[in-house]
Amino acid sequence: MEPQILTKRRAIGALRAGVPNRDVVRHLPLLQANLKDKFERLLDSLSELDTKAKSMLIRGDFGTGKSHCLEYFVNQALERNFVCSRVVISKESPLFDLSKIYRKCLEAACVRDKTGSILHEIALKFNRNSDEFRKFGDWVESQVIFDQRLAASVLLFEFFSDQDEEMNERIILEWMGYPMKTSVLREGLRKLGKIKQYQIGKPKKDQYFERFQFIARFFKSAGYNGWIILLDEGELIGRFSLRQRAKAYANLSFLLGTSSLANSSDFGTVVTFTGDFDGEVLRGGKLDADKIPMKLAGSRDAKWIEPSISGMDAILHRSIDLQPVTKEVIEQNCETIQGLYSDAYAWSAPHIEVGEVLGTQSMRHYIRSWINRWDLLRLYGHEAEISSEKLVSSYEEDADLEKPSDNEAEEG
Image (cartoon, rainbow, N blue to C red; front, side, top):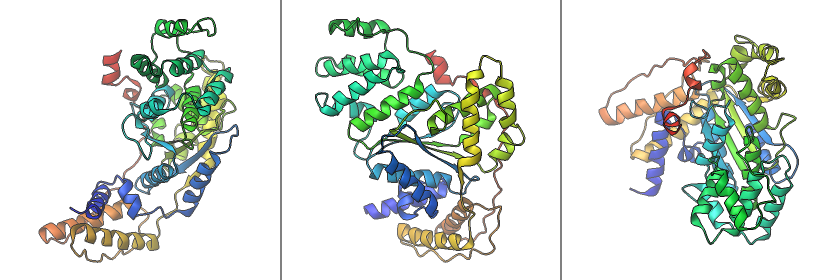
């Protein structure tokens, strides 16, 4: 099968499943110009060494194009030589646990010219005798808020580069959030005569935002333009307990750069939420914007008050709403996908009248209904009308989301 036909079939398959991929965004570009422009400015700004993370919040209902938007951003970021990580907020990667988000982001990291474990690939090909590596090491040493394990590991990474593959692996795992034994780290420093230079103990808790900064600067030192983090389905925050929701909002503010405690210049963050999150969770329903500061005041979690308020304010006031789907946009997409389908299967897909545009139907509904109708007609000669139901968000608290997954329980 010709490569062009294969990519078009992959695109149709992804649209049929409602999960857009890179083949889709190649043939079905993002139509909302303000989102494209803002993301381009975000990428541009990452080359400027200021003291604030760059970020976007996107808000829209199910099927309105959030996933398509993120996939487009992935494509653009890779084309512009960024490291890119796309992670779906879930039980395995809950926003109240920044350590899990951090690990998932590194596991999901991708670049244009490499496959596999990207941190390993980049680290093992980094010229540790270069000026860039020296500047990176100097920068890490200058960050007094960093756990000294990071500076010590960079030193070991430099001097054990060609001698000890096992130590290299341990160091990279340390950077990924799987710390090596303190005795091993100290023994490496002892061999270099540097044991008294660092105060090494167990990894500091709540240091994962600093680790985001560390890895982002590492990627940039290795020749990439920065690190783009895309978090999908942020609305899952609404299903956590109140205490964990507070921590999730606080972590969100760190990643967005809206908290006074955030300080980063080498990574950008994009997060999506459903359109009704404000009304159901923040200002109505759960009333988090009012309840969380009151509940945390005077408690052991009072430190989360400022950043959690900052995170909630960002969702309320900085989110970009996806534009409503117009008949013109629907007809334009229908024509494009009709041509794509016809080319993919060497079959002339008939024109489908869009008809009356209903506010209850998403763009995803229209696209999947067209493809299903063409499938039935092409394969079985059957003309059909496709019906669907609107998916409604649930913000009911779910205690299972806060329990360790089966894999974590086994590891524990």
